[in-house]
Length: 177
Image (cartoon, one colour):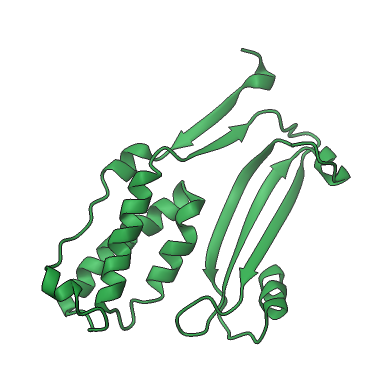
């Protein structure tokens, strides 16, 4: 195998396999709008912490879900507990998700590109979410052809926009800023 063909695959399958949902009685699950008790809140935070770590370290597909769940810790409800279990099941299903870091990116001439996105009013309280990727790539990507290019993901983040914005354009602009 030549150096040009070499790539590193990073998988978090073992971590995902160890994620565990938390039990809640059927009668309690039916009370979707009820606030969680203190012990249930602790359990919810534990569930969320499992997913947040995975969303930050190895699976950007979970980053939004984990961030949105964390935003509900202030006054969590039974439906949020159920959502946390659902996110864990989703993470376990996607256990084989891999990040691939390509050695085909020439570090001597590499370009660093940022990609941002935002969604307006997609959180329960009317807030908006933003995300970004920081990518390392060959400068040919700037030619904007339809040809696929190798990139290595350096960083990703998905988090809530701290202030309320009034439009999609404002959310996108705030995210880019």
